[in-house]
Structures are given as structure tokens and as C-alpha cells.
Image 1 (cartoon, rainbow, N blue to C red):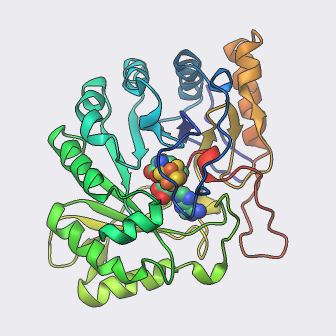
Image 2 (image 1 turned 90 degrees about the vertical axis):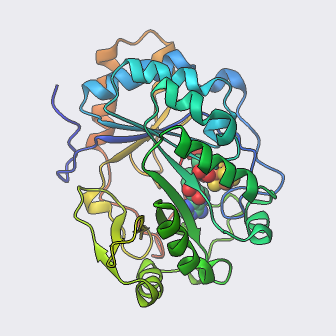
Amino acid sequence: MKPLLDTFGRVADDMRISVTDRCNFRCTYCMPEEGLRWLPRAELLTFEEIARLAGIFMSLGVKTIRLTGGEPLVRRDVEQLVAMLGAQGVPDLSMTTNGFHLAAKAQALADAGLRRINVSVDSLLRHRFAEMTRRDALGKVIEGLRAAEEAGLAPIKLNCVVIRGTNDDEVCDFARFARDTGYQVRFIEYMPLDADETWEMKRVMPSDDVLAAIGAVYPLEPVDHGPEPATVYRFADGAPGGVGVIPSVTQPFCSNCNRIRVTSDGQFRTCLFALEETDLRSLLRGGATNEDIAAEIRGAVDRKWAGHSIGAPDFVRPSRSMSMIGG
Ligand code: SAM
Ligand code: SF4
């Protein structure tokens, strides 16, 4: 079949599938302290439904599937889903997790066919980690990172949301951590997708400032890589590890965006900030054929917009926040 080409010439071949809206953390930039109203279980796609959709998306040229949430490791037996997707031959299968359950799950995930993992860590200081995630769990997450390494999940990438005035003083400590461990730390700009709706532009730490702060201590060299939102750098002195930045707010990569998403309740989104969703779950449960579903997906990709306008007066927040979409 032809690839998923939109009217701006972008090919969608990289997808995020959310496996749950639930989470055991309450990161301040994502969820309210009391959590959100979780979706009833019957509304979540089953593993069989997710696997069927994955097959359809792969037939449309999707090469990369990342499982996310909410927190994917709180979905019971998620390693079974990994095995089902692995058996379907997903070329690049990975997961983004907060790492809390990784110590217990890393080996099972690797055995099921997971190749790589991204773990979110916003501070290397115990008290600040606890403040930002509202869970005193840094030790547990570090234990999870070691387990992931032992299980051979590589490369290990860390996701760090940098918030000005909160953890921006730690970017060089993260770079040192990358050099010590060989991990790649990816600094993400804070986006207006927090459920509390307290996001402000002045709290966004621009990626250029992150790179300047690190480069002054550890000179960096850009790494050539294919189309991906992160710009990646190695250490000029040849130290292991590396850093990357995802400047979604200050330098949006919309014109090269190859991403699409399916929420845990089966809604197809062509942009993190999309205001339109396509209800694939109703099609799956209503007897649609794979061809019918593929046609709906093509139609939605055809309608994909040029990009978001964060910070502009006409910017409209999507009704779902980050954990409900699947970041
Ligand atoms: N629970 C998992 C985790 O935290 O890694 C997976 C889901 S989480 C929504 C995916 C990524 O989105 C995490 O790296 C998280 O830090 C990031 N994220 C959440 N809210 C964000 C926001 N408002 N701006 C930027 N990144 C955000
Ligand atoms: Fe949970 Fe991830 Fe959101 Fe933190 S960022 S509250 S870990 S879904």
C-alpha cells in the first residue's frame, strides 16, 4: 500500500500507542495531584484490538511503534502486548515509562521483544524529583534504569522536561550523568498540555539555552540522524552518552513531523495538539474491515494540519491533557 502521505508532503511512519490513561505518578506539568477521572476499562482498547490496529498501520508504512500512556507499566500484563506486537514484526518497538515498575518488568519486557526504552527523569535530586512527580521515587527509578541496562534494553534514553525556575539548574548535572552512564538525555520543552492549565511561556526553558549551558562545560558536536524531533549531540571529547533537545515550543518541528497517535480509548490523532480525533474503536467494534479502517486513517492523515501555534493568540489547547493523549 502507499505510505501515509499528507497534503504537506510529510509521511507518517512513526506512531505512539497509549495503552492506558492511568498513572502512578502525578507530575506537576502533566496531571493534577488528585489524578484524573480514569476511563472505564471497557473503553480501553484490548491487546487484540491494539495488535490489529498495529497491523493495519504497518500495512500503511508505519515503521516505529512506541507504547506510552499514562504509565504503560501500570497496564496489567503489558509485556503480553509487547510480545504480540513483536510477533507481528514491528520494525522498531519501544516504550516510554516513568520507570517506577522497570526494576520488576525490564527482563520480561526484553524477553517479550522490546528493544529500547525511554525513561522520564526530571531531577537527579531526591527532594526535587519528589516535588516534580509528587512521588518520592528517584531511587526506584534509578534501580529500574540499571535493570533495563542488565536486560539489554539499549540505547537507554532519558526524557527530562526542563522548567525554568524549577530544574533548569540541573542540565549540566544531567549531561554529567549521561557521560557517566552512556545514556542519552533528551531535554523536552514544557508544553501547554498540563491538566492543571498553569503552563506559561515564561516557564519554558528554550532548548538553545539548555545547549548553551551544557556546551560551556562539555563541548558538544551535532550527530547526523534521520528525521526525528530531537536534535542529538555527542560530547566533543569522545565521552560516552549524549544529549538531545526537543524544542517543540521555541522551534516547532511541524514541517517535518512524521508522527501519529492512538489514544488508549482508540482515538486516532495526527498531532499532539490536534483538535480533531478519528474514532477507530467504534470501527474496530462495529465490524469494519481492515480496508475500511485504513481508509479512515488515510482520510485523517490527509486532513492533518500544517502545525500547531503554541504561544500565538489563536492557539487552542486540545481538550485532553498529555496523559490522556499519550506523550
Ligand atoms: N508515564 C510515562 C512517562 O512519564 O514517561 C509515559 C507518558 S508521559 C505523558 C510521556 C512524556 O511526556 C514524558 O517524558 C513526560 O515527561 C512528557 N510530558 C508530560 N507532560 C508534559 C508537558 N506538559 N510538556 C512536555 N512534556 C510533557
Ligand atoms: Fe504520569 Fe508520565 Fe504524566 Fe508523569 S508524565 S504524570 S509519569 S503520565
